[in-house]
Length: 325
Image 1 (cartoon, rainbow, N blue to C red):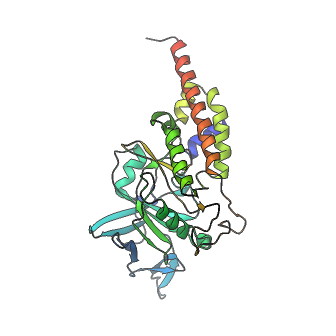
Image 2 (cartoon, rainbow, N blue to C red):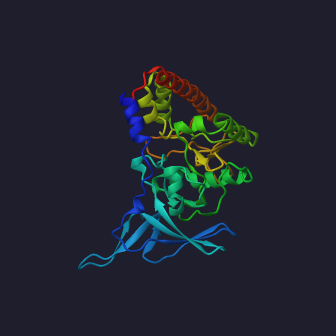
């Protein structure tokens, strides 16, 4: 049961925004997104972009001001032409709120309840900034290119703004990460995923990063163990996040696919002539060729069958157990 305990601890962890608490700096960077032009600009105040990394200008006692590289816990975002203001909070990677390692992701504070409790579809934004060591792999350029090719499809995020200089991208909030329970409760969940992959294939596109390799191994083991679980253990596991780049929008109960930085076009990582065709190398030791989308779908189908079997078995076991008064 160590595997299940790990899943329950790592995958079930609720959303924890690192920016929810007080930061030792009084100011957060100001960013403006003009959706009419899709341009994103930074206010050069006490924050500076150095090599694509945010740096804070601090004063130390008896010394001149120095620049310290630091990802802020929150970002103040102004959206034009609506002239609305949003507080963007940094997701906590260690709590399992963000699966990727190539970027820091900020979620609109208005959308936090939707992340935690499957809210009723509050309209918010997501702000992504690619970390320095991953910038050479061109995930931002690739994702922008892929999203442009997917424009008009209801399940695909739309570009609000982006900025190549700061390696930043803003899209609408499309929902919370897919959980094991969602496979059972959402109408036609597996068929929805099949439809998304078919839409992409018709455009010559493939995601290649819906699941991470280590996550695939855990989920295959989970699928094998689900039918053996007791009703109590099953109730504990069902709320677990699956670690997939599939999200659920509420109240529509529709699947959405996100994070296209590993995407391929007609079998090539070169989404356009300005993007390298080489497999992205996000660390000195890790060259990521990705996982075929249909392979992930087969795993999801297996999980769906196993979860259905486990729920039915648990239901029958509870029906057979004597009632107490």
